[in-house]
Length: 138
Length: 114
Ligand SMILES: Nc1ncnc2c1ncn2[C@@H]1O[C@H](COP(=O)(O)OP(=O)(O)OP(=O)(O)O)[C@@H](O)[C@H]1O
Ligand SMILES: [Mg+2]
Image (cartoon, rainbow over all chains, first blue to last red):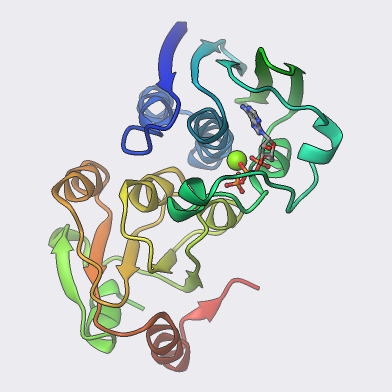
């Protein structure tokens, strides 16, 4: 099964709508609640990163019998130093983003924690692509 | 501990999902940083927060939290209520500060995560 969602940078009212949809789909597929939580927490952090740090993006979801593949592709400033961005506590979030409840520098490390495979590629001034896979069977 | 007991303890006003007031909770976490909340991997967790926006409810949705307590008379918007109703999340407004609400609930035996 394949799904796609659009994400608008700066839109903190709608941020999370795609994650919410994916959660409903996984529930309908009877995926175990603990696994759904891992997927949607990672997806939501990725979605909020587009809203917080990029201009716009797209989310591509592929659900197979034993795993879910997620790609978050954005047009934005990109990440100059991915290793540094992955460090817990590192954040360049603006005051507005912080007011919205984000900017702890915990998102990327938490995505790593909740997924079975994760990869970030980025071109400064162009955009960022985050890919991850979560196994749906224990 | 039942959610309705927490409501009483923090002089709370239940904004939505009264039908779930009998649900059980064991732990609490107080934060205005949603990414911090999203790292917590336990069940039956209540969130106490001063952040009254859509993302607080989204975070509760993603983390399967049964209830959120908004401190310091922060008011909950219609959009937040709709999202909470969709997910059966109990939203509570309390006049207490984050410190006082946390203290009261801690004394009652609601456990910290760490
Ligand atoms: N899609 C993105 N585009 C550009 N920069 C990004 C993107 N995602 C992450 N970053 C950069 O990596 C940093 C760390 O990201 P991370 O998600 O860990 O923390 P945060 O978003 O700043 O705060 P939190 O996720 O805890 O709310 C960000 O502050 C930002 O500099
Ligand atoms: Mg983030």
